[in-house]
View 1 (tube, rainbow, N blue to C red):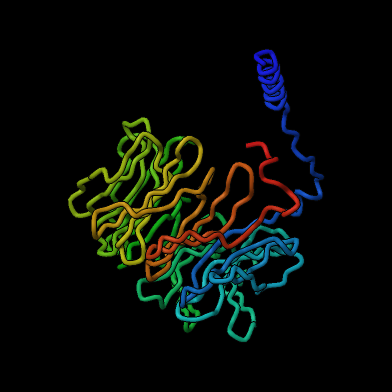
View 2 (view 1 turned 180 degrees about the vertical axis):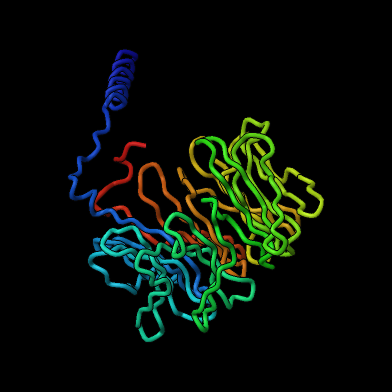
Length: 365
């Protein structure tokens, strides 16, 4: 009897070892199958926060789509077959759409408006003009943008009234610097100037009296991170005197600096939500972006579910501050769009950009 038991145990052990030594053979896929993966970007919330405005190349070239948050259904809004069209935002208080596109690959992007009736207007029609959207004014009655219409070498900063579509220059850029942010009262501009790949300069310039403050007295990397709504503070990210980059709060009136956030990973970006209740901070944790959301009213961390192997590429809050749109990719799949509801703590995946014929587990991480 003991010999039978011993024999049975040996057979079982042999089968177990054999099963362990079997290697998983992933499916081989054709180039054509990989070409059927989709790319997606953007994600501005509509006024009622039921839709997102996105760009997708599922038609074969980038076009603009509306993505229904409840159902995940996409509605195509542009039908280009030549140029790529990239979603920018909804016109405040309307369903009208802004998008960016060049002509024939000339890289001279213009800003376009799609009216309620579907007609398209070129808002920056200069023949050799290149324009980029730069946000909305505090009262949402004007659009900020940069343009090289005056001089092809430099990008000036403009403000365009969204009722008359007339624009005025707020800052003439004669030095080739990069305009990063503008304060809500339109007094202060933040500028950066590249020195090397690892060093740049950061300045604040007062548009009223033309005074300038340099924030980069010490050599290092500096990235603008916006102004407070009361125009008293400016935020930036730097790596000065530290191994990892960190977030700094700068009081404009006194020059006082305060480290707001640092950890043993680089801070990649940070910004405040519309009404400054929340602060978003993304860190590069072991090669991928990890998100922190701070509730500034309660001085607490907002719960946020982790996405397995997720690299958070972009984030934006809805105006109500109740929803967050996230663009998340993994090491095995393209970027997808998610929406997180802060109230019920639901993280909802709205898109599937990986070709359904491809198993993500077959991909090399």
